[in-house]
Image 1: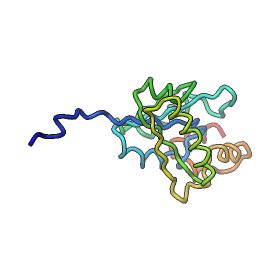
Image 2: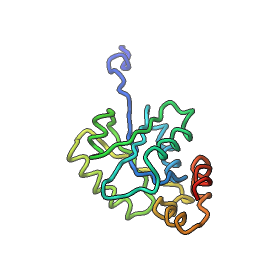
Image 3: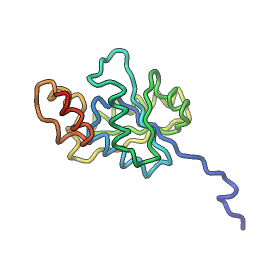
Length: 168
């Protein structure tokens, strides 16, 4: 009997977790930490959207992820613009990871996944639901609280909280 592993070379399972991450939240980290065991490499893609003006620079968001995941060699962070499936092609990702908080998130994300699959047939989207304690944590809400002087520390990783202490 032959060893099946010898007959089929192992392909690396590379996933892209796209988002604006403006700012990085504990909800994002929850999805990343739970996605990591599923893939050989996880690329966090900070997407730029010309119709949105982020509160934090790309450099700041990259720095946060680099600090948070400094000891995890399977995580890489990049900034990209344009179509997410084009970014997948450039980095060799055959999976897209998306976090789901509510049912309406799934409906929206499924439509995007279907479009991505139509554009790039070999890219599958993996949906992960967030833990209940992160359901209400959204970057948009965190930014609103920040703009109004509220305390957002319980929604953010320590690296983000420390950097915000110097700015707000």
